[in-house]
Amino acid sequence: MRTENGLRRAIEAGETVFGAAAATYSPTVIEILGDIGLDYVWVDLEHGGPSPYDSTALEELTRAAEAGGIELLVRLPKPEPPLVRKVVDAGVRTVLLPRIETAEQLRPAVEAAYFAYDGDVGDRGVGVGRSGKWAGYVDSFVGGEDSEILVGTMIENQTAVDNIDGILDVPHLGFTFVGPADLSMSLSGGEPLAKNTEALETAIDRTLNACLDAGMPIGRIRNDVAPAREAIDAGYQIVRIGGDSGAIRTVLGERLAELQ
Image 1 (cartoon, rainbow, N blue to C red):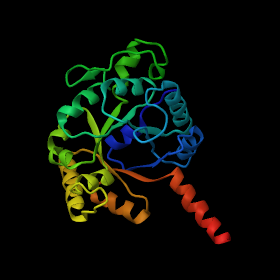
Image 2: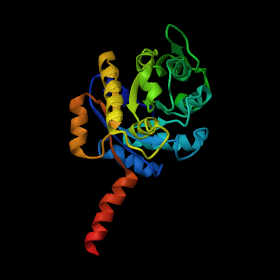
Image 3: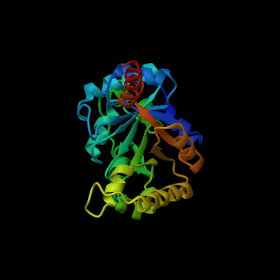
Image 4: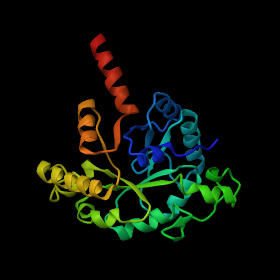
């Protein structure tokens, strides 16, 4: 049974939300992550997992999320409107758009998630999918679905940082998320392994301050408790605190090493 998007409600209420990545793309793992009390599961379809065009695969993940009382946060491989429509029709309600550099690039992808957009008809259209219980055009669904959708964007290159104010003005954008690895590479001067820590921190601070000034929720990855607390104190509202594969390596790897 479909429920309200608890992640969106928590963010709108000003709460800090915590999530973890599911690199295994396992419905069982997703259900467990919900059972331990996390707010969202990061599902990365940009660098792995099933095809985002495979509705049947996404339906299994959304069922697991509902069973675990947790929200999926799905990062798409590109900000393509038809892809956004396909994913939200499969039952995903929180979508993260990567590789955004300008507001003009972002707006069509955000609009594709909504039936009503910026005072006009949106670009979602009505499909027969899990989000609408395969019923097609039903007034109760079309009238209520927009209040459950949450669309965010990655800030992961210098061009996006330079254009951050315009990006934050895109209607119905719900949050941003800092991508420090790709952002670092964009600042490397053509050398992907070069680390320009000072420039990276400047870019991250610029993004954070712009989001705080605009009242836009912002997230980042912090895999240890102390850095996570620092991020929360700095104003980050969406914090990813690890993932299934990392937890397996850390917990079982250290346990095995000790036994051996």
